[in-house]
Length: 166
Image (tube, rainbow, N blue to C red; front, side, top):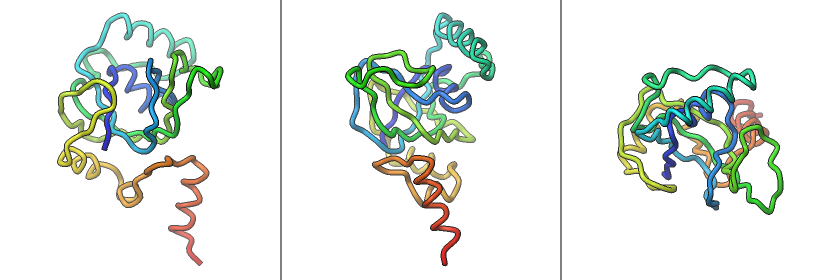
């Protein structure tokens, strides 16, 4: 499983405030479920700017800097595509970069898993992946959203097929 290290306030917005795109200066062809790793640093500038953005848009209030988990896998999310500069404007209040990893289906972990992060997308050890999946509800473990990642409509179709078989 791939992971992406992101500063803690921004990961919190992915998991709890509806952030649907991760802005980057580089693109990716990776789609599917990735682990979200909260990096070990929180910049005061980023924290204050993000807090103001959340307030301006009527979104949930960030926890204090001390309360944000750092240096750990805190959840998983599905990358469903990568928005590039040639695609033009992206219809999200969160988009502000050259490239944007389009995100769906964020799932926070109940217990963060401490691990040192890395730059770019990186591969987590198998034992860490096993720990992640033990915290995701059983239905999610049985159907790992692998490339191409699901849309809400595809997810509903799959759930209907699973539970409402004729």
